[in-house]
Amino acid sequence: MKDDIATLWGGGLDPSSGKTLQQQLHTKIRTAILDGKLVDGARLPASRTLANRLGVARITVTQAYDQLIAEGYLETRTGAGTFVVAGSPDQLFQTNIKYVSRQESAPTNHRHILLSGMPALDQFPTANWARTTSRAMRKLNTDMMYHNDVMGYAPLRRNIADYLQASRSAVCDASQIMVVSGLQQGLFLLANAALKPDAPIILEDPGYDGMLASATATGHPIRYTGVDDHGALPPEQAGGMLVTSPSRQYPLGHTMPHSRRLEILAWARTTGSLIFEDDYDSEFRYSGRPLNSLQGIDEGERVIYGGTFSKSLFPALRLGYLVVPKPLIERIQKFRSAIDSFPSITGQIALNAFMEDGEFTRHIRRLRIVHAKRKNLFTNFAHTQLRRFLDFQPSDAGLHLLAYMTDDMVKAGIEDKQLAELAQTAGIGAVPVSNTYQFAPKQQGLLMGFANLADEKIEDAVKKFSSAIYKVLNTTTN
Image 1 (spheres, rainbow, N blue to C red):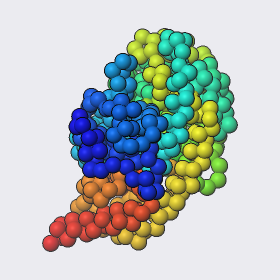
Image 2: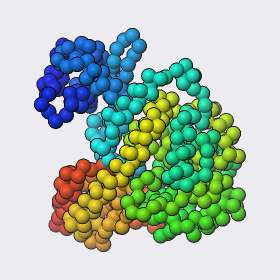
Image 3: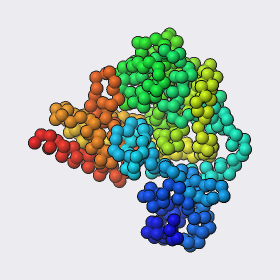
Image 4: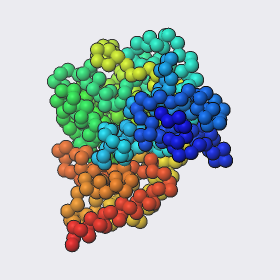
């Protein structure tokens, strides 16, 4: 580490800046990490030493360090100091351009992957997260250190149950909540714990390819059911477990009406089947109220409800949850204890503190406003710049828009995979719709993310994408 840490970012802190000294220091250290000037494992100066070098109060440095620790960039080692964590959070979003649906990540270098279904990460209240996390960690005791509950951290489970009862009309209590690392892990746990070895996992077609990957890993037979304008159709198969996304079908975006929900539940009861309700982004509806969860209508008998904090907070948190029917709890506990035990307690403590302070619900309310504005901006510019190429489907929810390729594009021989690459290059998260189909006739189109594009960048990104398409068309037709 250089003697003068300020040389790492080309200057000191500016008291006349519109940002606080703590915010400036946080940004500069984070940027130095991402640029490789502070390498993995690098030791930072003691807070007092750095404060003296920069001519600021020590609390300015400690607050910046605390925030970076909470965000996963730094770590403290008892008796040794503060160090850069190997594999910073942003590296979870960095790789060569590739197709990423919902929340896949595979870091290889420092190039951003652009996800099609990301929340507005620039709006995340990092200072509030750092403050609540730091306060919670100061209360860490030996009981927490010995944590061994395979269902997850009990206070967090109580908060999740309360939240689901209020927001999704779920019928549950804290004893039914299992904290998981994500919904794909949740499916793996459920299938191995609750299904007979020859029982099929039934997926929507088209559907989320991440669930297909997880289902394949279980070793269970995989079957498919079709999707119409009302969402998943009742499967023809008897037995097994249907994986469905009734709040907003992925990728088509349909909301399953009450009548179809009753049909699906009747199928499950008649055939003795289970349903895994994948409720991946129900927090973000921009008009009206969402329908009650399938689990709430079923009253928790045959439906396992699954949710994630990847969409409402940030993917690197790696926390989600299941609402497990009471007859299945013991079986899933036994399987969980054999392979995984539980997610890291520190993340659960941090999230619980965030929910306890009311920050989670406030953040969701803010995001709904931000996302709705960005959706309108993106839609307006897209209809102006892209209507020759893409036919955008109406949507009142979620973090991405569905757009089918026009006949002109199909006739020109351009595929949605190529179009997704052009969108990524222009700075827009995009996934080829054709990737979500298995046996149903494939449609050509894109899932395009809008929520994680800053307001002032939307128009430029759409114009760049439009220009790139024109260039390809000219090359193709000449």
